[in-house]
Length: 377
Image (tube, one colour):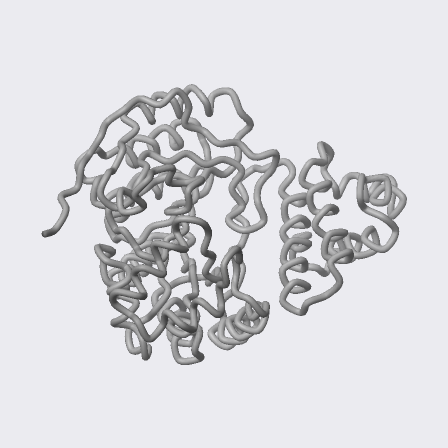
């Protein structure tokens, strides 16, 4: 017997999650979500972990949808008190047709001049194209689609079964093309890459090609993580419907492990990087810059350093070196002065005066500020 979806409206006390600075993945500093639970109910979703879904039955994640009915009002009050920066918001699961909270939250962001990042598994986001264009003109808007298998891939049908009520990937790619034609930066979040289902070269190449062919500018990828009740739930799905996968997954994710044993991710990441290079798109999301941003150059330097961190991780470089670059990027993100002015007035010595930017990294930053380097233009 199929279970009916239960909708619960409630009024939380807060809505906005705030970071000290923008992350180096989606370039978002804030996040605000209108719903808890998701009707799409993808069986691999990390949001079934207990810290995101504190319920005794992880099945509730797909069938008990809580709508934060005062989310737009809370968001307006919260954003009025914080510096303008990119916010991760919107949720275009079927509940959005009933409650329209995502659209109302976008209206708040548009009114207050906040750039937005939206991640969707549904073409329903096109309903709000007018608002996204208005936001993009004033600040910036990025819309990414979550796709982990492209049509024509060996295990496409099996992956579709695990995505349950999510619209077909073909419709997501078609929506992405419309957004690209409307001037919205868009791409694919290739997350999570399921071992044995999504990590073969045929699927990796297919996802990248479909993205490039439909106007996408980037493919962001990461692997599957399994923790606490989500691990138990996912293994239960494999046991019941995909028993041939249960043994291999138990070996990859032994009890207590969060990521696959053996550290296979860098090899997959490098293959995706190669496919993206061949297709003429990026395997990192370009950082959106608000028009007229006074510290745009700082943000471009941070972007370049963060991209270098990711490259070093893929090539398994020493953790101390990786952390040095990451901390330097954070320090420049926090810098109140325009870094070009610091360099023009004090030279290399000025760059070295920035916290966590030693002589070696100062020389690397100096190269980024060179007139011939793209970010300085």
